[in-house]
Length: 81
Image (cartoon, rainbow, N blue to C red; front, side, top):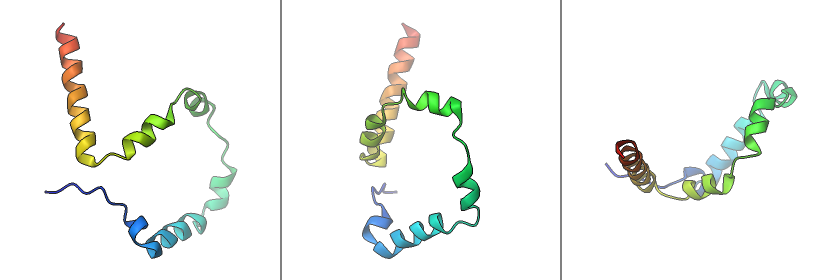
């Protein structure tokens, strides 16, 4: 099994247009446009550093899993200490 860091919408402009049409032509789009932001989610978003999320998404799946395993090992060591 090989992990691929591949976004098909980047290599296939037709697919990117298709995804955009799916979002903009959604039958319930008006309903979603009228939804009020959840105050709890908005409160958490102000403290969220999105740069770390974006940086993590630039990594391959294998790199993300390797980092997750390292984090789990660190947590186990901290619990044992």
